[in-house]
Amino acid sequence: MQSYKGYSTMLAAVLALAAAAGPALAEEHITVTGEGRVAAVPDMATITLGVVGDAPTAAEAVAANAAAAAKVIAALDQAGIAGADMQTSSLSVNPVYEDTTPDVPTDAATLTRFQAQTMLTVRVRALDSLGAVLDGAVAAGSNQIYGLGFDLADREPRLDEARRAAVADARRKADLYAEAAGLVVTGVESISEDGGYAARPMEMRQASFAKDMAVAEGEIDLSARVTVVFDFAPR
Image (tube, rainbow, N blue to C red; front, side, top):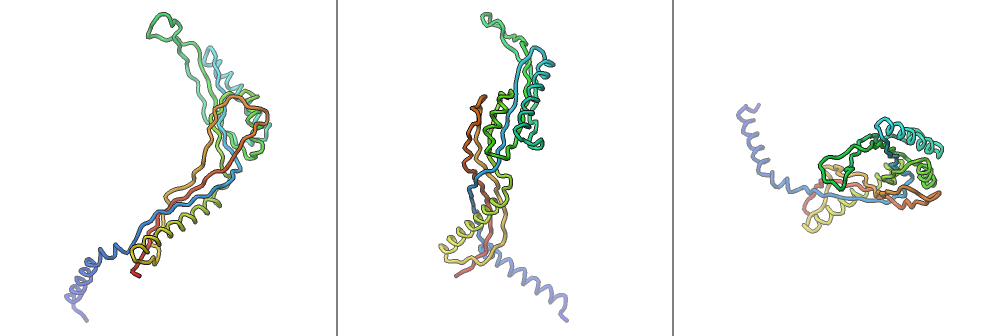
């Protein structure tokens, strides 16, 4: 049986060899970032709309705003929007101050009225009805439309395509760098996902729309970004 001293000598030799080989081992990896993109035709839209109005008192402003918002919600319901696809995203009431004596300079402002606002975030799952939904909301009293964005109800299948493309892009780059350096890729140490879904939004700030307004949904872009650590060796 080897002595304790013999084991210590062997351990010291192994540690010394590992320390000497450390820099060379570190040079056997290459880290590459890959990107993948796919275009998809959207199948749903999200709009942010609501009502804003003034009244002499806060109570009157809130009451009038609530009544107007209820009409808009009823119109959306009639247009086929499910309750789960409507959500109040903002509710506020604020005092409005004005300088009531513009001809007489003063630092004081007078409280003239109160302004109440209710905003709704609405998902439209039937894109062919989007124009009618917008028109119906405006006809019911919506005077605020802040945004319109297109999306996919299920992004994952197309995102998976972008992920595959991102990994392929990383491998392409790794092969290129390895070839330029006289090396060859031999394996993968790790893969991490850095990015995700990206959509192209459309912003709208109109207060009125034509009947059955036509909206061009175009395409949305989905992207993935990965960082891959590859192993390589001399050719």
